[in-house]
Image 1 (cartoon, rainbow, N blue to C red):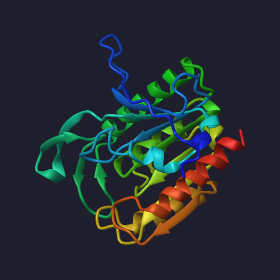
Image 2 (cartoon, helix red, strand yellow):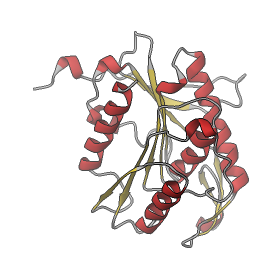
Image 3 (cartoon, one colour):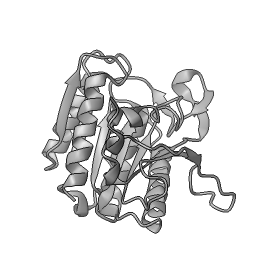
Image 4 (tube, one colour):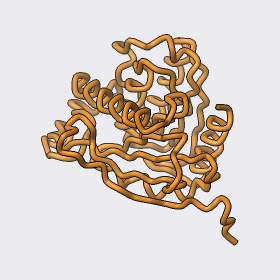
Length: 243
């Protein structure tokens, strides 16, 4: 039977304001629509998807409504993607070559990171402390999440990186504010799109930089599985309960 006290009350809206060209349109879901949110999770989708992609997972997380979480799922702009023969699709940045090192358009990636910074600022203006904002992303969205969160100029609650890689590891200018930021990494051991070797490489890079990430591997491809959803919920609960 559904526990009413923990049931997620969902409100889906679209942020669209012609006077706010630097604020990406997004899908929002709130656990308590009529109450001021006191935590936010900005969650970026992968290549070719949009902000609706991960919205169905939110009720499955079964997080306590008292957390007062606002989920923000922004839509990436549509751009030509080289590895897909220049086909125009939602993307946070162009991928020029699909090899183990991933040749990406870093300028576009950093622009996307700036858009995430703008979304963070919007959440702060709406009354959420930066220390209760989690930056999450899947695949391309995860690569942007690393850049956006680690370069932001205020403390954040954590980074959740799903089936992704650290595309700007060699160029990023990490803000010392984030030297102890919690980082939660999930990857599929059977992933044919972003091989787990890239997730493991990211883990090693972060450890060499002094971070202490939590790493989880699952017998899945480029996707999200039920056990992962449970682990995500547990991590979010720990992070927000510690604030």
